[in-house]
Length: 176
Image (cartoon, rainbow, N blue to C red):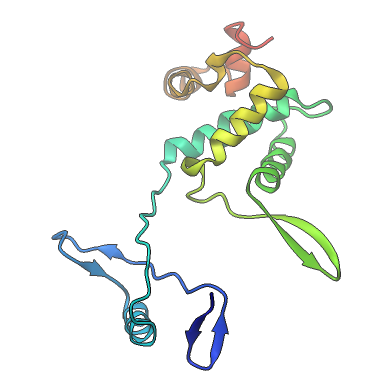
């Protein structure tokens, strides 16, 4: 089904992003979005739509991904070190491609490119990565305990303990 927009045809309708107003009684959009939305509504009467909230990830969740999950994958990879920031960055980029990638065609060849993980950690991305780690390396469940990560970050690291989460887990004999 194609949606008519002026004289051009589009495969899918555009997204209109806004916020609920502070009173909880309506929606707030920017001036341009409001104008474009009104125009779209006039040109597409009776079109069904979906209102989907954007659930942003927490800083703690992002920290766990960057400080625990990416180094853990680097730890398990032969020839990589969880202490080497370049290795951890390579792992992060690979995880983005593998678990949040999109297939595109360029010059007749298909390529997989990474999409942003912003606001994707809590919509399945982190779970897919954790499931992959579990199925490939069968680590102890304690590795994924965010309370342990928080304890390391707040109580161990600032006071001269292990300088990364993986070494902290090794000191507790959780990782071998």
